[in-house]
Amino acid sequence: MTHTLDATTDPDFVAVDGGGTRCRLALCGAGKHISVEVGSANISTNFNAASLEIVKGLHQLAEAAGHPLEKLSALPAYLGLAGMTGAEIAARLAEVLPFKRLRIEDDRPAALRGALGEQDGMVAHCGTGSFIASQVTDQMRFVGGWGPVLGDPASAQWMGRRALTRSLDVVDGLVPASALSTFLLNHLGGAPGIVAFASRATPAEFGQIAQYVTRHAHDGDALGQSLMQDATDKIVFILNRLGWVDGNALCLTGGIAPHYASYLPANMRACLRPPAGAPLDGAMSLGRAFSQEISTGEQS
Image (cartoon, rainbow, N blue to C red; front, side):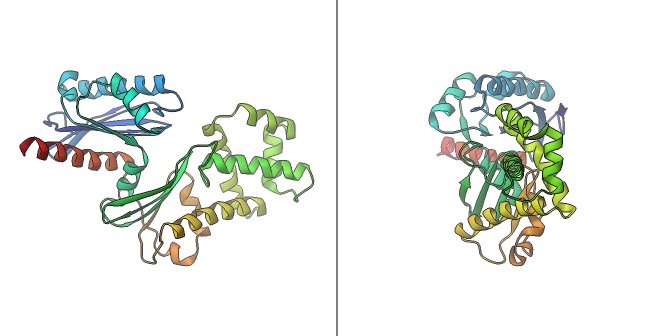
């Protein structure tokens, strides 16, 4: 999918927001941008597929702008990517991209900057994965984002896994049945079906189970509400460890995070703010700063 805002812009940097669901790329300059969207770009989950999507997006971006790819390649580029785990994988990706001036980070800084703009505050991002972050006088601090095996508490995939585990507790007679557990057992073919599903499910497929949790919790289901409160308690614990102060702006971003709002303590609910923008906006802000760094260095 391609969305062109201004195809006559003389761009000065490229920004990329790559996630597990989609990758968005923007060509920016003179306060305007051209953007395109391609598929998943988690470089740890599938490096080859992700790098191909990014390259495909660059070709689409060049075509949308009416520029040759070589012109884009000469620009500074900022990439915020899911699955960016360190210098080794960043160097590997840099080898397959055409840019000479390149900054590659994980996707959390772009999501944080996009949600808060340049104001101080905190973000609880819970989509398929999760992280909690703070931004204070341009200093960013992050907790989580370690993926579905070792982390991502309160994420949609975490919620899906927890709901299935609790449904098996019902089968074992450890907790009482609820409308949610009954639905999940019927939906997946009983305990054997849940085990079979869990053996092959991707994080995104586990995340799809979370919609049943939020729906049943909204309808008053005890198990659903317990799961929602457990997730929110984890968010609150981390926010406090990050130095929560009443009056902080707090944004809940990602597919499931806004559903936790009513489970937050009153002092945090009072500080909820809608996100200022999307992760691509954050990538553009950080890309602009990177471009300015390069320009300043070249002039000195």
